[in-house]
Length: 124
Image 1 (tube, rainbow, N blue to C red):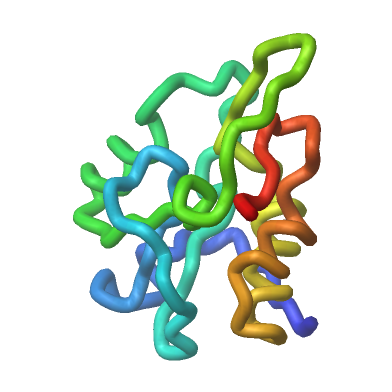
Image 2: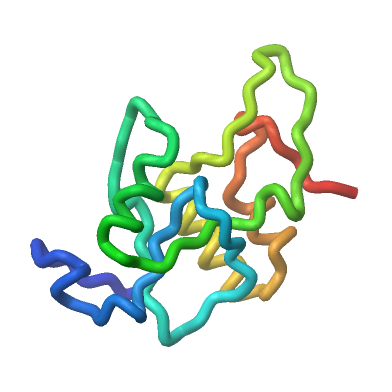
């Protein structure tokens, strides 16, 4: 994959209607990847994981939001820590998106990017 880095804000680089801010708190499910859109991954790294902070940031910037379809394709699994999280690291989100782009299969993509430590498994 080719990547460019810049210190410029995505708000200065792309029209607002092209930007989709990925956040686990969005009500909108990402159903497909639109090659004409720009997807923001890890636009805000918050190690304390404040709920809805990324969603609020996207709303403040008047951006479209979406979340990965974890709830639609995966189920919570019983684990010793009773831990379940739809919040993924940037590399995990990238793995999900790149696998989906190649396979057009959400189950394959989620299998590639959502580790068992998140407390989810693919539904049967």
